[in-house]
Image (cartoon, rainbow, N blue to C red; front, side):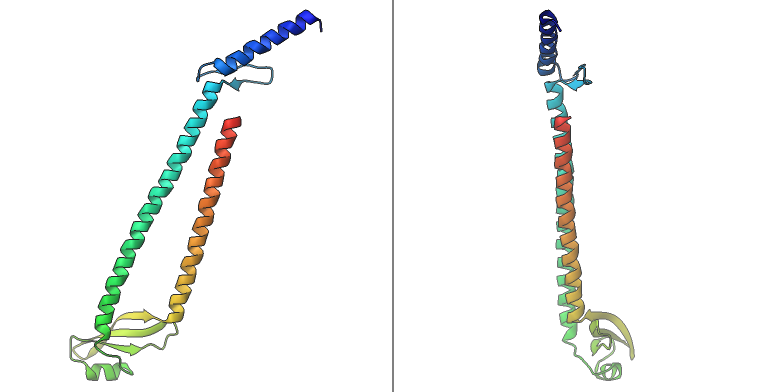
Length: 178
């Protein structure tokens, strides 16, 4: 290739680079390797991708806030139930249903130890001499198993959130360099 041709090619390449660097955010510049986004277009696309990632993250944060509020409501409900149950426990624990019915007046509550390994006590209501089961209280081993399940679920949620953030970063990085 002659020097004049090389100079002409160089001048054309400089013009293409000028269009890439200074072109508007709506354009792509034709090159021998295919169209390339202008710097303004690349910047706009990156900002849009980051805004989309931020919206996804914000949605996740809003979901987390809702889940936290729900957890708080569940905790308050559980506390209220515990207070109710504690008051009902004051009515006494009896060896069996027959003893509980004999020792309590109608329209009162009594408790009997459960034979189920996952339960501790069963709360009964004395309905005119008939024992109506109302609630069962979990055993310590059942509570430990529930805590373990919750802990494993929370760990899985953290893992999923971490992977989502990594994926968002890869997507943003990919759009920044494509």
